[in-house]
Image (cartoon, rainbow over all chains, first blue to last red; front, side, top):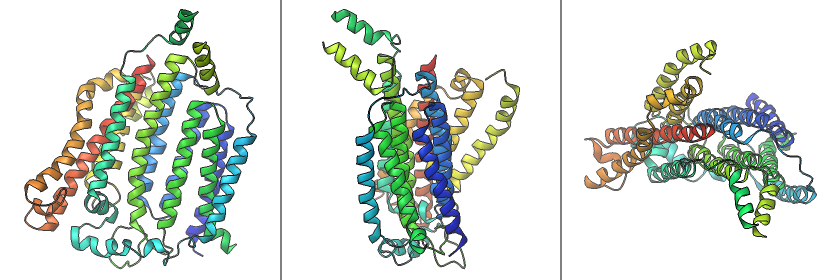
Length: 190
Length: 120
Length: 138
């Protein structure tokens, strides 16, 4: 057993604790900070699992941009979560049921890091052995992203474009008077 | 112990997924719901990257004297998924801001109450 | 945060470094970890840091909202445009081999152009999202 498996073990346990804390904590500013920590831990796990490109993205997106966005929203909406008196028994049962079914499904999955797992048998070796011949660049992830699967990436850029336009449409309209809108409607009716 | 080490990443991914799922269905605060959605999403990323790992392999950047690389395909999928994820999250947060501006609250039950009052 | 000296000085020192690092990530993506998605996010983060420290108006005078909005579309069009150009040169959509004399060189040019398109769109979307949320507060 190599050392990286133990590092991975410790990091995933931290990750689980952070996620539980996100659910438990009611101060939403703390939730924003915890979700930043969650992303940073996730990025560290990606480095241990050899996905350096992904770790890079997760660190800059999750720990950087999302936290700023979340704080921006909380500055507008306030940071307290209301204590709800709704029973959480049914959701808990659903979650435990689904989770145990999924865990039952993991018995058939390949061992962690197994080089003969089906996922490594089909197209991946082809990319690894031919990328340099075809494109002349050593970073396989970039080559697959931009060249072999360029059409997909065009679609992804389209999704980001659409999301940006969506945010522009939703938030660039003039602000209506806070709180009064819904109440005014009520008064008009009565 | 062997079994735990070889499956712990799958189990943690499932645990995170269920934590996110719980936040989605049980919590009424809209910001918390979106954080839950993010946790759910990140757990899928973890699952994919775990599939791509080859023990003893290195990061898929070609270099001399190395033969064994981890599988680059999950990395490509997840790389774009993360950026698309933050774009869609911001769309969700924009909706939350608009809901707050017209209802004055981001709690689901209060919004439903305001709506039912309006119908009467 | 204009009246806090320490964040202001640190930001002034850090922002050029962050932008330079973003450009390095953008153009070194073929050889090391990196590429358009990461570079776009890093450059967007540098701009957002500037906006957080020096105020939204200062950022808007550096990157006017109209220009950033059109950059969102420009990046996407650059990406699609490379595909159209390869089609006009007689190859398939986004088949970069025909962009230069040898297929390998063409691949290099194509991938760099496409990554620039991705980087522009991602950075512009991040900045616009920040504009929208921060502008809503006042």
